[in-house]
Length: 396
Ligand SMILES: Cc1ncc(COP(=O)(O)O)c(C=O)c1O
Image (tube, rainbow, N blue to C red; front, top):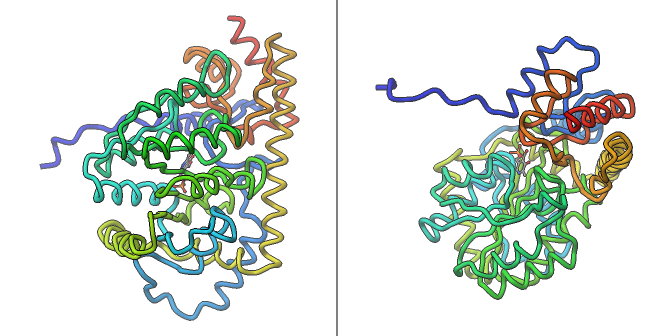
């Protein structure tokens, strides 16, 4: 019976990691996989998270089931991080469900949308995180793209984006990166978010925000400005939050889906729907990561320590952006200043597929096939080698 199944092609990004591991060169550089790396090239567990884990193990007396929508303390804390302490003035309209990572939250949200309106079309940015399309599609949504990135300017193709959204039929779902766009690092500014919010409200489009990097762009509040602005402008929206990167709990699968409904009566129905759908997917979300995040956020001393660690990560990424932009501008003779204005872990270098292969095979520099680089993989020690190598392949 299983013979009908065909071989799944290797994941291009995981393939980059595997090739990097096999490379024995001393000068190899991994700019591929999307995890934060510190000065030593490691992906650490933040100190505040480690301390919360130790406290939790000492204090936890049961591992009995919680509920299909998870840990209420975690849900409330993470919703307040995203929507602000006043929950954008819409507390009664919010339904919250803990989910296994941002991916679980995206899939739960897509199932919720498909239950509300089967066969809905979700529009994702062109380009977007590669997993958006299969994750949303597996829940039954049709997935299409809206214009987002302008390869000619390495900025947002804002006019094209607005005109496209302004022509969509009502109830279309628009997936937006709340901050730190993956793969380009190119975010909308506040004035652009305001325009997008007005178009979404006018056309009655449904925003589905993906927040996977809160605090890794500017800071916790400025990175969430998009969510807070939209929550004040449109009646309904969804937010999928991932705690993987900003709390360093990647493998603990820790995320939240927030559904903002038109009114409190609707919200009381929607939270039950989220629980019902979760029962059919994972029944109950995994506890550990959420219990740890709840403890970090609810304990003032741990929270302060975590914010300081997160601030260090964001500052480090932003200073590496400046360093790389300057070095690339010097070695290529082209203006790479746009890298400085981008935010989050990623930027996309304007390289053809064969140039990406040449960087790997001739210079031991590994990146995603579309030229996406993880800025946290750059360091003061390897930056000159990266910039010289990129210049060499761009000349060839
Ligand atoms: C844009 C975006 N959304 C969602 C996720 C999902 O994160 P998680 O590992 O929490 O499922 C990622 C992870 O890389 C991401 O880049």
